[in-house]
Length: 252
Ligand code: NDP
Ligand code: 8X3
Image 1 (cartoon, rainbow, N blue to C red):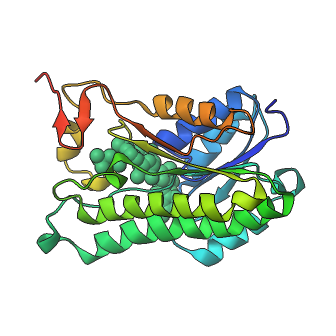
Image 2 (cartoon, rainbow, N blue to C red):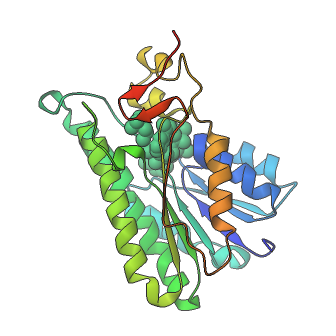
């Protein structure tokens, strides 16, 4: 059933995006893997090419010219994108609003919100033309609930959920499915990026079993393989140890 399906995954060099690439490859989904770190893309391409056709695109989602150029450059077998996973994103800093850094705010809004929009804008016309497709936006529990010092990251993920809902309404006449998958704490490079390599990042996933990127990849694959009349519109997933953004049962 997946033969001939093509998926474009942003943020495929690490964490959730990379795990999703591995999961999709197992099932023979043709892959367009995107990210800025070409060396990593090459390694993943080599590993997965044994299972499916893989192409890589190197662009920064903040740069709309690069985004459109890269997606327009896709060769014929990859041109028809059936599944778009808007996953590239990150948090920068964890500061009270009065101490927040402008460059961190710019990064989060530009990557998590505007980057997602640019990639979507480049892909959606191909889907509306064919009257089919599935867009999955990786939101966050931070898009459901604001937590202390989360301010702008939480705002960016609230925006992702609002954009997802808007896409679902506007693309409804074209039979295009749109889903938001909103994880809680997932053990990836996310905290290394948020804390800029500071040792604080090491404690985020200590003392409990956090979600693993493969757990989210599994949910993404489940979401894209439901029958055509079934759309999982919005999924919130926590590790069992996490009750909400501030309540995590740790055994330290
Ligand atoms: P990682 O840091 O492990 O992966 C982030 C990915 O995004 C990398 O592949 C990175 O690739 C890509 N990326 C970052 N910035 C850009 C950019 N400017 N242009 C292109 N690609 C970029 O984190 P996760 O896997 O955890 O994060 C994936 C998504 O999941 C994000 O949207 C995040 O907000 C969300 N999320 C994460 C949670 C967590 O606890 N980990 C929980 C809820 C949601 P490269 O650097 O090569 O460009
Ligand atoms: C990532 C989860 O709680 O660190 O979106 O914001 S959290």
